[in-house]
Image 1 (cartoon, rainbow over the protein chains, first blue to last red):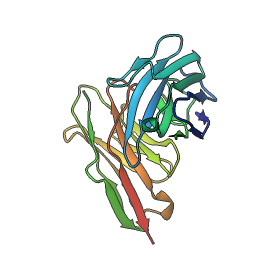
Image 2 (spheres, chains in turn purple, green; image 1 turned 120 degrees about the horizontal axis):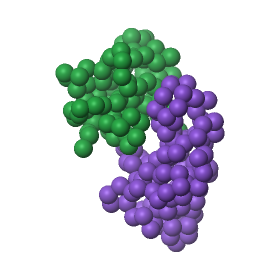
Image 3 (cartoon, rainbow over the protein chains, first blue to last red; image 1 turned 30 degrees about the vertical axis):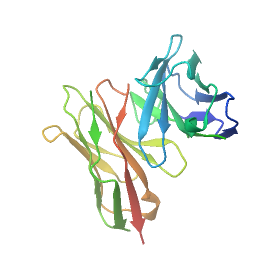
Length: 121
Length: 113
């Protein structure tokens, strides 16, 4: 139980194009999902908190018009990197918060997706 | 704001030796603590967590961590490591359950045969 999937696992795109990344909670409902960015050999940086049915909350310094987040259902959040540039190349990881008891670790836990490696040429 | 410090960026140990990965956090009235493990090119997997109750928490693969409020620490330990434990380990803290985790810098654990 408590599995989070991400699609695609890796994507290569040309500069100026937009890329959409999907994050799904497979066996639990998540009213809250999170998007992180991880640079090589560094820690995770929270980009935004995605709340089902409402606007995402972005961390300071993250451009909301560049990183569009949509949390259309209790099991799906999407991150769209608009007009991507080489500096947007990174490992993007999503997580979903399970506040119930469906996960193996019990209550109130964030479960992470496997990540999406974005390379912008 | 919460902050987490993982004092060791890299920890090399021999197989079957004990290991401790250190984690300190900034003090808060209420705190929730997590250890996650990341294998190469993968996302994070929850190793163990402290939300309340017993200060000693254990994982299914032999790791344990102890919440020490007076020292604001949540060090991760394993009495005997295996090659398969080679990974990056992240300590994280939140003051709102599993909402808005703040991560430490990570510790790369390398197991040598």
